[in-house]
Structures are given as C-alpha cells and as structure tokens.
Image 1: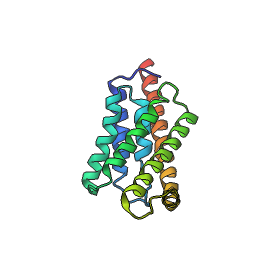
Image 2: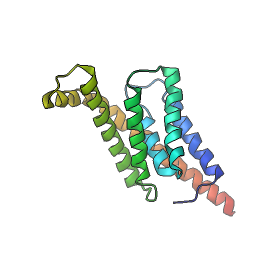
Image 3: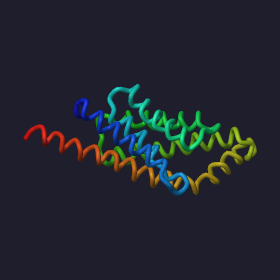
Image 4: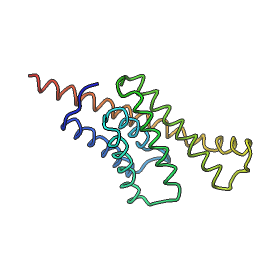
Length: 173
C-alpha cells in the first residue's frame, strides 16, 4: 500500500464527497453509493478514526437534506461495519478483494438491518419463521443495493487508482 500524502487525502475525500452527493440524485430504491463508499474508506484511509468519520459524516450530511429517521442508528452501525470490512483489505487492495469486501459489506448490511426490522417493527412474528420471512421480504431490495455498491465501490477504487498513477507519474517526470 502506498504512503498517503496530503494530495492523496484530498483525492479520497473528494471521491467520498462525490459518492455521498450521488445519494441525493434521483435513483431507484436502495441504489446508492453508501456501502461501496464505506468499504472504500476503510480500505484506503490509513487513519482509522478518519476512515470511519468521513463516510459517517457524509451520510449524516446527506441525511440532513433527505430527512432524519428512527432507523438511523442501526444503519450507521451497519455502515461502520462496512468500513471495518474495508480495513481487512487495506494492505491487499485488488480487484477481487475489493469485490469480495463490498459483497460482504452488502450481505452484512442486509442481515443487520433486516434483523432490526424483524426485531423492532412488529411486522413479523418473533420466531425463526418470522425472521426468515423478514429476510425473504427484503430480498427484492438487496439486488439494487448489491449492484449499486459494486458499481460505486469498484468505481471509487478504480478512480483512486487511476488518479494515483497519474499523480505518481507526474511526480517522476
């Protein structure tokens, strides 16, 4: 992993801000950059506090515009778990590791948030059958989450890689 300098941080923050702003654009349900952004942040930003703070702050600022809601704490917790997943590939960022980490982030997000829907909404009976029904009912939404997370997340890794190669090339010329 390359050593991050001030310019690298500007690139990273710029990518994360752009991803957060993309959340404000019209989009199909659950088609947002948030999970890809969180995994990217965990994988690329070496300072852990900053790696968590930037995507959570970006999410909060976009939530101020979109509206605050009661499920925010569990969504933010799930987002922090996605940042944590990204930290596991920090020294080994490859296309495959990025793809697998983003995919795992989507799965973990789905499991946590749907568990909380089952537990807290009263819409499902409190049994294994009710929990499985809740997960089954959430499946149509996870498709858009997966596709958008892969597109935005892999795009973030790619853009970061391209910009860094140009910056390195420009510094050596």
